[in-house]
Amino acid sequence: MKLAILSTAPNAYSTGRLKQAALERGHDVKVLNTLRFAIELSHGDPKLHFRSKMLSAYDAVLPRIGASVTYFGTAVVRQFEQMDVYTPNTANGISNSRDKLRSLQILSRHDIGIPQTAFVRDRKDVLPAIERLGGAPVIIKILEGTQGVGVILADTTKVAEAIIETLQSTKQNVLIQAFVKESKGRDIRAFVVGDRVVAAMRRVAQGDEFRSNVHRGGKAEPITLDSNFEETAIRAAQIMGLRVAGVDMLESSSGPQIMEVNSSPGLEGIEGATQLDVAGAVIDHISNQVAFPELDVRQRLTVSVGYGVADLMIPEGAVLEGKTIQESGLRDKDIVVLNLHRGTSVISNPKGTRVLEAGDKLLCYGKLDSMRSMVPERRRSQRKKVGVLHLPEDPE
Image (cartoon, rainbow, N blue to C red; front, side, top):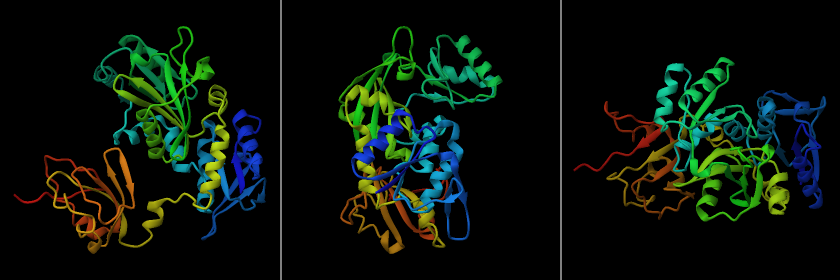
């Protein structure tokens, strides 16, 4: 396998370990400075130049995109995707995870724990937002902060107001989050590769510091996750569109709550704490998946005129409840079921004999007119999500 590691820090621990792991496995690997690429766009022939020369062919690319170069870095990754080069983390996945607000918005529509969060712009909306979160103390976060920078604990409402006003006066966008007191000063970092957690550690803050990041002096200890935390970490990474991710979770009384999904997780802290070859697990995953470049399903499937992708919801009492996919008649309407979401489980390419249940959500590809005809007339008192099909109920 010929692998490119995109990084502006070739001497960083993580970059060095990934390169070492690839070399030990007999792969051809090069560390390429993300900022030295030039993107060339022409009819049907996406190209990349590196250091003013045409880039040679690569089998896979592993992005290590720093926060300061997110826009250009994701553009380079996206170009690799257009050239059908495999990447475990897509440009879209990196962008989703890098924006704290966007990532929480995406996670919030899934059955997955997150801290209650508010995002406001007008000063008059700050106090009502804090009250909806249960009052002080609250956590205030700068959207662009990393490694614990720009994360502040406000003990009182007045302090929170003052901090938010100050930050907003400097044109900073901030999030307000409910404080999970039972997890004060500690969190869990799960390192997800593919569909499994390859290593996990608990980070504990030292002294009066409430931030547990290793970069802020936090102490790390290896742990074995229970099934609930493990499944939550894997699902969060997959929802973000990442196959290599560091998932940070709080241990709340109601179960795991996702703080952040990191698309370029550091290796030094977790390898040091667990003594596991995390870099090797990343390289092995890429090697196993290199023949299957990531595809933008909507980009590829909507090329056919009149066809598209949509979610189909099955409410209680729907016509299709209790029927198999084969009996549903969807195929006769030129609709194919790609995925079936049931609770926290995802069933890919479900068989025709699969019986549909109330609450199931089907990811479908098919003729837009057929799917559009299945959307009931909107009721004035009922809001519908755009792009989500709700099957009509059986008549009484």
